[in-house]
Length: 253
Image 1: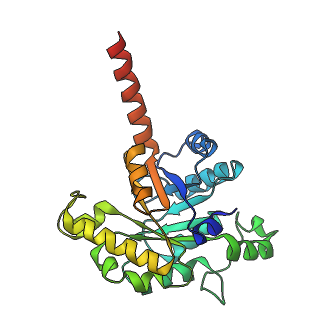
Image 2: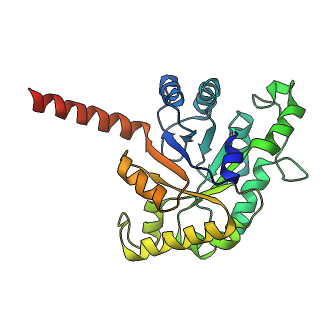
Image 3: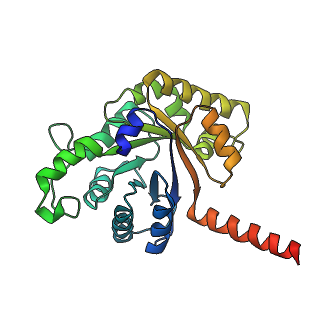
C-alpha cells in the first residue's frame, strides 16, 4: 500500500530523519524498513543536488522520500517534487491559506498552480503523463504544526483538501508559547491536545517527532493516538548507539 493510502486510513507508519548527505546513510536507513524517510533541508546543510541523489537511493529501496522544506515557497516545492520526492513536509503552517499555498505548489492545474517542467520526476520528459497520474494518487503533503497561531487555526488548516497529515513540532511550539524546550509544561501539553483533538475530528493522520531514539517514548506517543511517527534522526541514532556501545564495552572491561 502506498504511503498516501496509509495516511488516509490513519494506519501506523514510522519514519525517521536524514540530515547527512552521504548516499550510504540513506541506503542503510532505507533498507532498515522505515515506512518513510524525511530529507531535512531546514536544519541541515543538504543541497538540492544531494537531495535528488538521496531520493534516488531511497527509490531503490522503495522507501518514500519526504522533503522537509526550509519554507512554504512554491519554487522550492516545485524543485524538490521535480527531483522525484514523494512529498513535502512544510514548516510553520499557521493558517488555512498557508496550507492551500502548499497544496497549490505541489499539484498542476487545474487542481493547483505548479509550473510544468521536465526533470527526473517526469522521466526527463519521457513520462510526463504517467507522472501526472502518479502525482494525484501518491503525492503527500504534511503540514508542520509548530506555532500557537497554527493551534488556534487548526480546524481550518486540517480542512484544506490535499493536506494528508500533520506533524507537531514540539520545540518550536513550546517556543511560541514562551517556554522553549519545556515540552512537559501544561500549556504546551494543552496545545498538543488541541491539535490531536482537531486531527481526530478531521480524520487526519497526526504525528510527532521523537527526536531522541527512545522506543518507550515512541510507544507512549502511539498509545496517545499518534499514527505518523518520526523516530530519531541519523545523527542522533549514530551518536546514541556509539555512546551506549562504548559504555557497555568499558563497563565490561
